[in-house]
Amino acid sequence: MVDVSAKEATVRRAIAIGQIQMAAATFQAIETGNAPKGDVLGTARLAGIMAAKQTAHLIPLCHPLPLQKVEVSITPVADLPGYRIQAEVKTKAETGVEMEALTAVSIAALTLYDMAKALDKGIKIQQICLFSKSGGKSEDYTAAVELHP
Image (cartoon, rainbow, N blue to C red):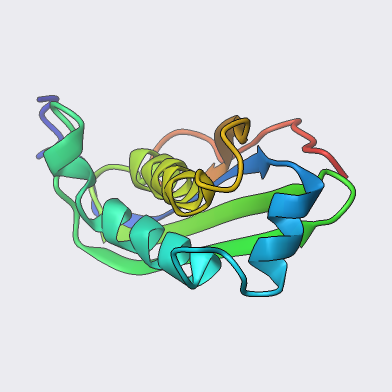
């Protein structure tokens, strides 16, 4: 693990994004609440939040961090068809929360896939990336990334 003990604890924030594409019929089933496993979006959102809190257990050498905020949003994109997933994670610590935000998006997408795979084996998880980060010694970062409109 990298030694961060000499670093100053500052407010760190990271936003990760991704999207999940599926058949129109699958999208409609999720939107109308007719998926076989129940509340797909609520379950995926909760899974993303829980995953952010477990990042250090999942990724070797990742520092365990006290998270003050984890917010996961899943927004419908009808013309994809599918969903845009965004996770915002915030802490006051000696190292950043990029991995926690990326883990939240990844696990939310995987949970959405698991909840809907009975309807559609061709679901695609796409374009998971760090969108922005702030805090700490390095400069703030915002990606020049555009997901499907």
